[in-house]
Figure 1: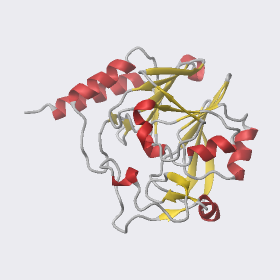
Figure 2: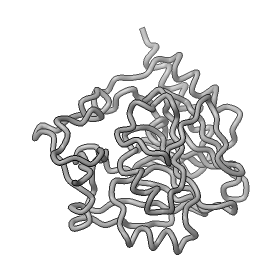
Figure 3: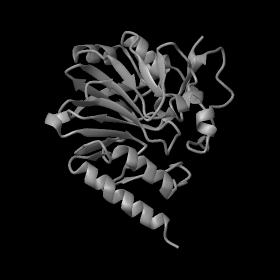
Figure 4: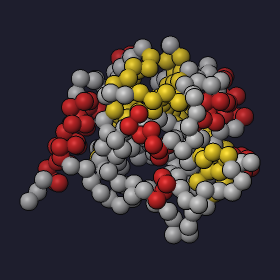
Length: 270
């Protein structure tokens, strides 16, 4: 029996004879069911039509994207640290070529994911990479559609997963919405991997939404809480989920502060 994958969001479900009747991730207001309806595939099917491409984005950071684009179209990141490599986010496709390339780059010691839209085939990634732990915030536990012992649910607002590597639960888009801060990146410049929690936009700013497809914003109070949790951390670059419009290469903390001021001023206009 296959583990079916939702074509719209990329989430993998437990083994079954037939696909699930619906994808709860897509029927939620933060995602959507396409006008053509719910459709399904499998990893075996994807491996015949798709492949992953690797790109060096910046020192110590390699991106992984699926071509042609699949599901939401996000990218994953490989963080190459002295204490071991970390995979940030997941894409749905994992195949032997991907596993071989990651092994050649030093393997992976941990996986962490910002929010449920990018959980995809995370258990397959863990198994393929040697049963590495997957770090998810406990507040989003109910969105795990394929539970497995490799998943480690953490609580609170911060979780150190390696030297200079801290998961920060900011909330917002999802209750357990998480970003990853790498303090020692590029000689101590620091980088923030923001997922969709702080969405890097084409203008070079960041923005925030509870629902991106339905354009439902977050409140000023929520944004202020999010940035207060970020305040103690230094970072010069911010890299988001999508290539071509998902990066701030310098002055990242200043850009985030200015973006927050702009956002709050607009939603607060009478």
